[in-house]
Length: 109
Image (cartoon, rainbow, N blue to C red; front, side):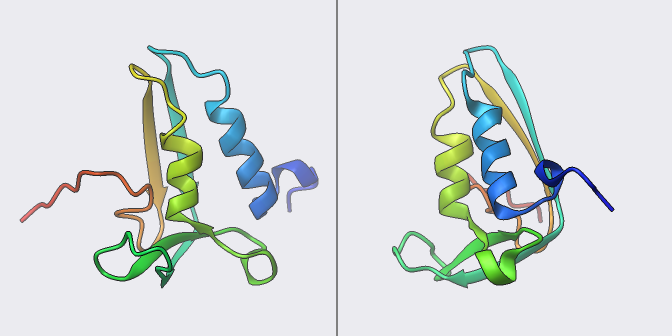
């Protein structure tokens, strides 16, 4: 029902929004990234996944434009952050546990 094309969660708009979020980020900044939607997995092609699968976010147009892979999410949202900046990521979808490809994993028994 969204009528503004820039607010429809397409892969292009999500990429643009993620880039906007981290652009100009300074030490001490606190950023929030939120995604609620579908998530999936695809075969890992660069060998960085222990289980052999990359986690993905599925934008509205993923069937024609593709998914956002965890490697891209890390490169866009995590790596550009300067030391002292914080990113709070709320990712509500299947396979979201390692969606940002962070070096640490919290295991709760």
